[in-house]
Length: 401
Ligand SMILES: [Zn+2]
Image (cartoon, rainbow, N blue to C red; front, side, top):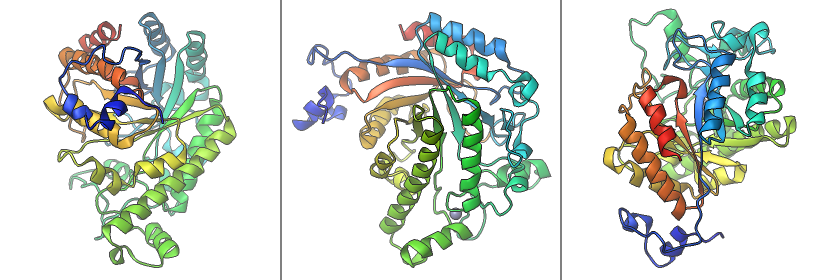
């Protein structure tokens, strides 16, 4: 076990929370934080009517290089439930079954205007690592390629989102196809096809970060889940204790992720594999939140991720850093990349407090200090680069020095 200052102090019963706000500089002199910074951006997410192409990301890379940033994550799709004007896959997918989900408005979604491959090359010239982000979520059009796909369902058979009664067909279809269930064989095939399609095109990436699968609340009652549960345990959901159900969910998510990891490494063994997980809900019960989702840290360790990305979204006001330290302690993972949201405007259907330069500076200053006490804390990536005010961008560059 690597002993860092945090673990050393914990051995003596001094928890990081007990140290909160205290000055311990110089106590552990050989600690040299190795904290790296970067952006998380998107080809289309929250770009609305803007058409971002090679020039935009080319300039971004120059700017990053100038300010000593070393990592870039790029979302390869947008979902209209959160960004109504941007919906679909933003690379020219070759698989016919994926084509109904293409975002035809995305510059990069067409073979003749595809530019992301040149961005990867440029990033490497500047020694910037570049990753893509893919979600275990469905898009409108998924049923055309994957009939039989199922989404998370509550006990009453309803999906987990409420759809406005006045919603039109398009909006309804976007929401109904969103949270696909990993116990459905077509959903898993869809994810395998999607990952294979994008990674075989962009084989010189440094890696891929996956967001979801996750169960939500008291799910799932879809046919795939009920069938899988009967197969694994010979019982129904209602015959299981809360603990048994949570354990089973984490095992299912672990096995789903292992299957995807094997696929990813078979395309290029050098690809790093990251995963978004780790969040403190409004009641502060991190463990319950994680286990309900099926994200038990012990099971996630068995997948063998290269890094985990907990969410730092500024929901806890002055307690934000205390809560994120709690999450990181709970995950206890050797490589933490903090997903640091610094938008002023939240996306649709995802309410978050607005952030300005003051918040940006304080969260980065906290990160720099925290990295001295916890060597698991290695990266902060700021989100969403395409949708932040200039003063927040400047606050990032001023603070990461
Ligand atoms: Zn299900």
